[in-house]
Length: 189
Image 1 (cartoon, rainbow, N blue to C red):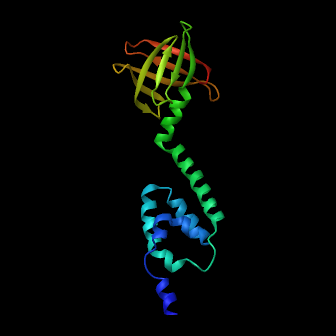
Image 2: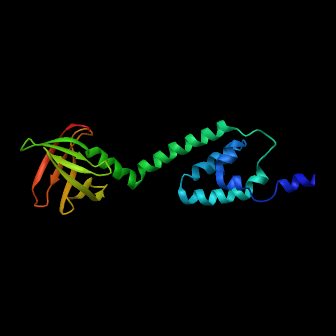
Image 3: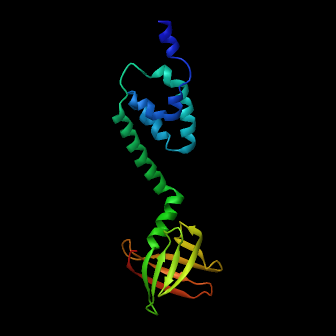
């Protein structure tokens, strides 16, 4: 009996490293899912895993029942879904969405030039007919849908999304000289 009491005390390295996954694997679904969901917030995850490292040996039936990998998979899916939702609601997610939305092939209203915009690549660029211009995104105003960027590391240009009916939009491109050009969508990249 004393060996069983000793076994149920102390710090669990597995509880620290695997946290909520360790709990759901040993059939503590409610606590594991709640703490696993909270672990989606990075700072909470650190403290939760430390807490579970101290509690795991006392609360889990380690060695008494078989570890359930299906429960681990369920928690993994819950965390992926929750993480995706949190990212899409975050400013970083909104910024990526705006940059992705404007990436495509566009046509100017006045000069009928074709402009290809790719802000999703590691090396973003704008291609006007055959001329390729390197781009460095400086600022994305997610409330006003305005992207400020430098062309060839020197000239500051802006793009603004202009919404029409439904969810469709055009772009307003403003160069460093103040010249403005409306762009109309042709196709995705």
